[in-house]
Image (tube, rainbow, N blue to C red):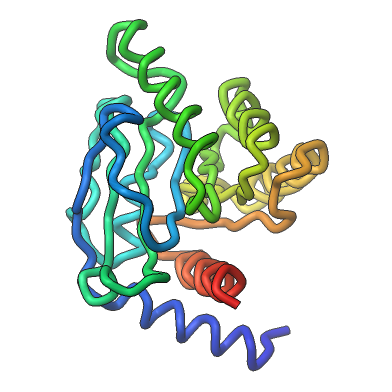
Length: 221
């Protein structure tokens, strides 16, 4: 049942992402992170899970985040901001994190990215939530569980977002949602609700935007 609050959050989410979003920082190491400001939400996931495509769909910008058919192309923490809100104390920043797991890069480079991800998660005071993206076609993998454990230890709030839902039959998607919910019961820092999205069709984007509006309000109340 849709409530008046749901409608209001959906509209507020549309307005939040209707502005002009732009790239403003790239960090290959913890030492090069931008000064902490505003409220940050980060997107984590295995290589090729669709992080960049989701950010593009979320902001309505086809080429804001770089997409690639080659896993592991994002090698830095990439920051985006809304140009209209960037000087406000509670402005929202989006962070595209390097994909973990398989990547077409040397093992030493992959280890470096992994260390960057873990250090960022543990030391960013204005990081309000991490959205952990899981491919609807495959569900949880060992690499995902490792990241969830790090988030639990770091006491960073996170929420699972299933991607590419349009590429899965409904019956299989329902099974993945159920197994995801069951797995999350073992993780204390996990947000209980799983979001289901498709960057290609736009399904789930309004719900994700509304979730971010709610998060911003909770952080600033």
